[in-house]
Image 1 (tube, rainbow, N blue to C red):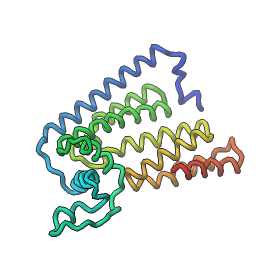
Image 2: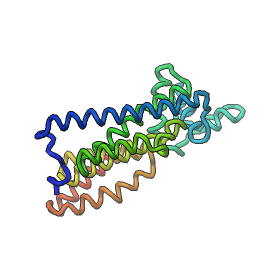
Image 3: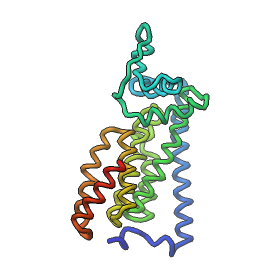
Image 4: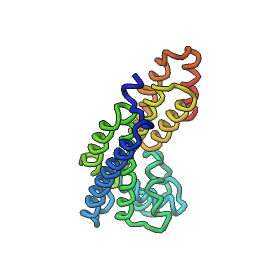
Length: 236
């Protein structure tokens, strides 16, 4: 099984280099698409969830903590109402350019193009782990050009992070499946834990992916399976 899904990159140096150039080109294409989409609406104002993430990040940078920006900016007296209605990771992501003094919504959306590029690369590595370099480039190209993926960047929504997070989980899941051990269990748990902070529904993947992978690792003793499950859960 492993020989079928993992290409011996060490034996094909030129092929690996060519693959890297192709992936770089596809990633550049994805970044250009995202940047053009953002610059096409330079005066967009945040609304809905985008309003929360952008202004929630602004309040966080100014030392207000995780408070509800709708109530703070739209209610007389600017009440400080703590909230955990949205996961925190994307607020931290949106806070980075503001912490550097770049506080426009245009700059925030351009900053998200970096994470769009990261999603292309991570999905490519996940697909390569599953079925080789050719499938990896196809997957990368689809993530780069598919409008339902890149439009979230233009809107400034947390869905921008989802392809990156899901691709990371799948990459770590296949690595664990091929070589169940402490190191792969740790990385599986870390990917799940970070992803939960970005999109709360991704916590379901702990149950639907990691638990079955750990318990069905038939090359290990039952005790060892539960140990790895516990390690991954602790890291998450």
